[in-house]
Image (cartoon, rainbow, N blue to C red; front, side):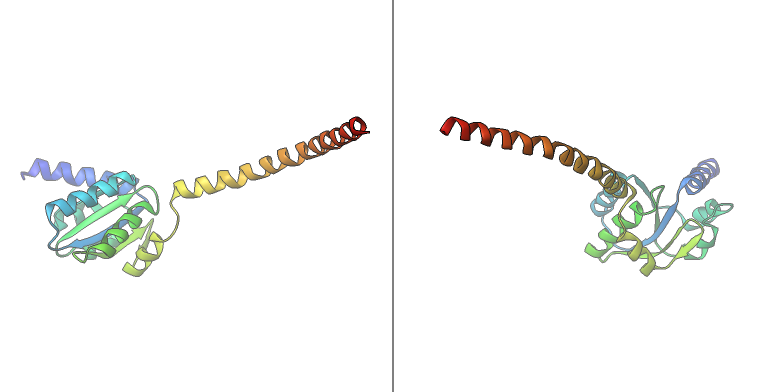
Amino acid sequence: MDRSQKEALVSNLNGAFNEANLVVITQQSGLSVAEVTQLRRRILEAGASYKVTQNRLTRLALSGTKFEALKPMFTGPTAVAFSVDPVAAAKVCVEFANKNEKLTIVGGALGEKELSPGQVNELAKLPSLDELRGKLIGVLQAPATKLAGVAQAPAATLARVFSAYASKETAA
């Protein structure tokens, strides 16, 4: 990789770090190409990104971002997952790491708060933004549904009463 390619990579990574709300740092030793491809596919489906880069270039890209404190974590065979959703990258990485011993969570950061591997695992247990939005919409729609049911109940009851009187009249 020549100098201009390295500069472009650092610039792209820096832009990605500036947009992201969550960064998860992983170490991967012995992952096959198929396993890495599977991990990347899952991360992309969750709306996050995953990059295996040179540690030195990643530390340069972290400069000037809210994740600058993560620089010491970049040693050894590391990769970084990042997402705008504060849970997406953590969910996928933790799920994959639980199924595959070759991937370990080193740490991460949510905004400016640095996270330990245990905190990343706890973060992964939280619902994603889409799940929370779905629950919120369900909660907001429930009262309207109940109100419609209550409003229809008296009319239905009256109809049944009239029907009962009508059938009583015809039987007599």
